[in-house]
Image 1: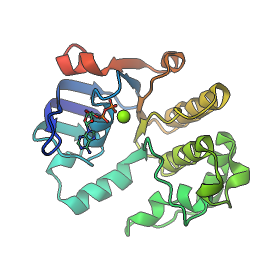
Image 2: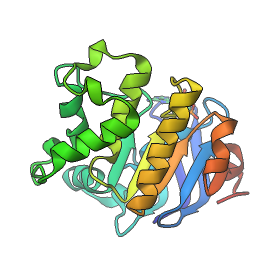
Image 3: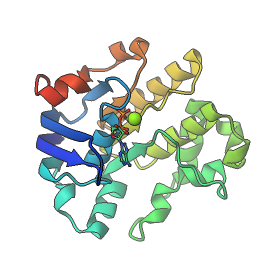
Image 4: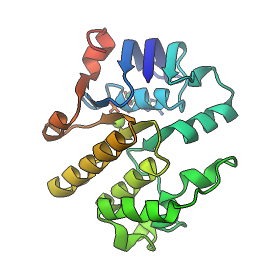
Length: 222
Ligand code: ADP
Ligand code: MG
């Protein structure tokens, strides 16, 4: 599902360079990505999502090579294939939680709201424990509730690949467990590949594989 080779990326004008000799993940595999703060985990997720473009190397996700696509195709690739759960949630404050969760269907012009979107939002929100907040606006939610709304939004399109950047960082242990269970259970059901950044060792046994970013950069793991 994901195949990366000899990737190199540097932020414009910055010293930080991320080099990854090789990384592969199979369809349906759940991979946890760990490593100290600042080692490039979020950058790597953004490269796979096509939000950042490497200066060299190959990134292939399913049949797509995001780095080689025109911007408009890349946007379509992202919407059609990736459930993104960003570290900072990025919920829109002028939309309700329900509208935020359904947002991936509204952004792309070619994506019509499917029949059953209402039920799907309801069901995901119920499993994330935020069904009573669906008609509220995000600014009324706690950090943990916002994070769970972002998780539901990442899963709503049943994407083949879910990229989650520390989606449980602001949750208490019970809700953290619930959120990761929801993510992994839903991913198994739709046979999605999951790449999730986490700092929490308690969560690691739930994944098929744990990849350490410093080792990945050395080329010692894939
Ligand atoms: P992690 O997610 O592992 O904590 P990041 O991928 O966010 O690490 O960051 C890796 C390095 O890139 C850090 O040194 C960080 O300061 C730098 N960095 C992250 N985002 C940007 C950016 N938009 N512009 C310049 N430097 C950045
Ligand atoms: Mg990060």
